[in-house]
Image (cartoon, rainbow, N blue to C red):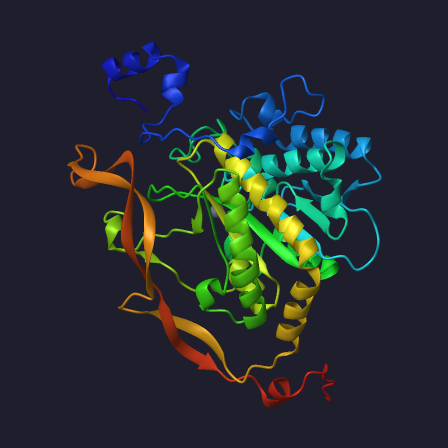
Length: 427
Ligand SMILES: [Zn+2]
């Protein structure tokens, strides 16, 4: 409610667009080769996001209508399948892109687990279009794609302009949690939500070779527009060591090269030690199994968390996500055998001890050349204390990266530790 009449009148006098715009930090101009992925106005297969100049993202019904039309136009490559329902009864579905043939590695791409972070949906729609109609079908020669456009579908429909005010688009954004107020990216292990139960059943059924969980991050400003993370980054924290090694030595260099070629700035997902003092360092911690990456690591499923940066424009973020998903599909095909061998090795392994709790380290794990953004501080009349003001100017700085040490370990029962064959337990 606005208590001041003059303020209310001033707001009314503002054009609607200015009322909608949160005061965000200055923006560096961007261009990149990935802009060529956008089709021309008038193209019969332009996506709703492209049609709006990446100002908007389609709602649940419009997304499904567009995908139904696309799938109908290329039934030899694309199909839609239901895999569950939300708490409010919306259908959960995926698009499968496949040339048929058994035994190909499956890339599972999941968009909208936090539905305000919906870049992956609009990127995936463009990629499916390009597979069906613009010559990218060769990506399916050696791999299948299973694409979930909207995982948190109920949250996606609780859409509004202020759900993520520190994010540059789309104009209306979905809600973080489900209709039951559950955060799906904390629900992998306990699986309270019907949406998560459906996703875990889908994972069990299709046994993906690689799993992408697509998000958008906020917090501090920095130059990285497409950040990502997995267990095993720089050799740290992998419970699935062979998978971690594959992700770190094969996926990471290929992904960084593909994103850089396309004009993007990839990096490790940035979580500041202190958002009020970003120079102190960033965190590189293990993810526990309530998160996608932690869960994937525990169950021997190669899982990558992707976090585009909320202060970059929606157009740039969707394009970066497209490049990452396309490269993951190419890699899943090219590396299918190596990936399978890594998964099998980790599944056959019987570790004698498992870390179940971690404690923060006081000294840095390592130091990186961090691609940051300059900032200063000012005394805020609103909060009554010093706040950060991002200045938009790129700076490179040495940044310590802090992590964790094992705190608690458990020893699995001996029958689990010594055998590689499934056990029959006599009762
Ligand atoms: Zn998220």
